[in-house]
Length: 214
View 1 (cartoon, rainbow, N blue to C red):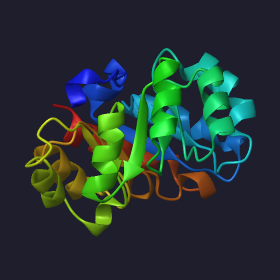
View 2 (spheres, helix red, strand yellow):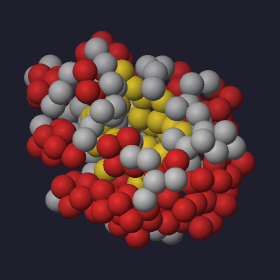
View 3 (cartoon, rainbow, N blue to C red):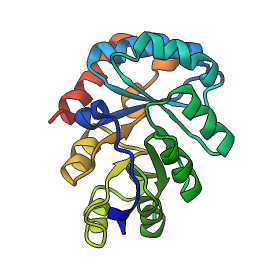
């Protein structure tokens, strides 16, 4: 069944880096300084979340400034209108925390990779069989890397990105279990969006890059 559906591949840089940084800030203007550090540390894929006010308005500036160095996705998409806006904005990929075949169809028809979230085998397979580029195992911290090995039994071809509570050791373990990439937020970003030490952020980002780079 999975071989019969249209499926948009994740961006090459994202797949090669095996690491997506989830940026959730208090305001969109705070993205710039943090992205400067992340890009310098070797990060090549960043998911900008719609829970950050002003993300859509600020996105064109971020694409112009960072688009040649990093895949900029848009995440926390929970409605069809926001999905359409993310497509129109030129998101490199779209991430949603929910399971929706309609979302997958909408993004795929527009030629944009999409990663829908889910936790149960039924949810994850529903998205995968609908044509998702990958499925987001969320919240990954509630199950652990062994869960992906179990899923690979009935669904050997499924492409998964764990998200939620993935720290440095977890990133290594999930990738060893067969994840195409890991989605990381707090354990990497720490207090960077609330005045934290950007030098320390650089060190944390480099550590994740070293673990995730094949």
